[in-house]
Image (cartoon, rainbow, N blue to C red; front, side, top):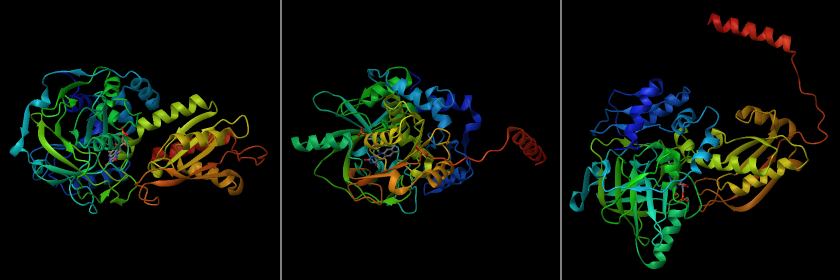
Length: 457
Ligand SMILES: Cc1cc2nc3c(=O)[nH]c(=O)nc-3n(C[C@H](O)[C@H](O)[C@H](O)COP(=O)(O)O)c2cc1C
């Protein structure tokens, strides 16, 4: 069937871009080795898709770093270089109803009852500071009882027993809301956890969309074809027919389970957790399933995956509403908390207005900086230069407090209540300093000499 499997994607991608896939033949342990490879390569500016066929203690291949490169995400979406966000928005708007089938690769093997043992999965420990091995790529599928409208969201999970997971809903998004609705009815919430599926399904799952918008339909939009789904055996939840592994179970709102600390996107080990428990009743797997991991911490993979759909939405909204916004960039250095915007300001105050819009719309942001359109917002040092030379704290800074933010910001309180800061580092009216210049003839001589030197080395 179908080209909607991760393994279809891996085969096609590796054939088209062999230089962007690195297969590590050397045996590695499940305990931190894979994170260490990702970290070492990233320090050298390298972010290949990584395959580990030889993992000690497991007969499965581990695949990771799928989302570490933005160029790779552009290719997944069929975008031209530099068109990542526009392409995402355009495809996501083409959401399609799912196509239900009776079986697919994910029904190759279905274990229930006594045959369920989560310890048989290749569980990776990512950081020395983690509680233990974690599932990091687990996408929880839940459906609203009356309408069947679904929700997808990622939830880090630790194996607590052969049939249960400890997990966290600290983002307090739609799954948390569905769980509260289940609690009000006095019932557990049926869930399925998808571990490994087509990368565009994984990307759609990280979108933070309005309650009732089903990310499985967005996945169809991104793939250009309805997502093919099968129903899980006990609760009938619709999961990708070509997924690698699916765990079916329930979250009892009254039950809790120890969970955390875990290496989070902030770069800190966090034990801020809602400590929920998922009781697993069924394990579904395709034959020859690979294990997909999402590198945790403030890795490029974790930050890209968590952010690309949100960036796309924010950029579209900002440009649509504020015509003066020329460029928007979320720097890697700011994890999910910083954003820079370049503004072609025609009236005083336009930059401040756009900054306030962004702070209101993006739930994760804490500090936003506006610069003029000649400043390259993709370069931290240029933005910091603009801040150093254009900005006066008593005049150009707006602080708003008491807003919901991320519970994983270690400087915020445990519910993530935060203040937010807008910094207007545009030159503004009356700015009369002359920017230094080098003549174009001198620049071309300088370029020739620099090229000569590059040729000699
Ligand atoms: C790799 C990854 C891991 C995540 N882990 C968690 C988690 O453990 N707990 C959580 O509450 N949110 C986590 N998130 C964030 C949610 O998945 C995200 O906010 C989601 O969009 C919420 O969607 P919802 O509002 O539709 O439920 C993670 C996101 C990513 C990309």
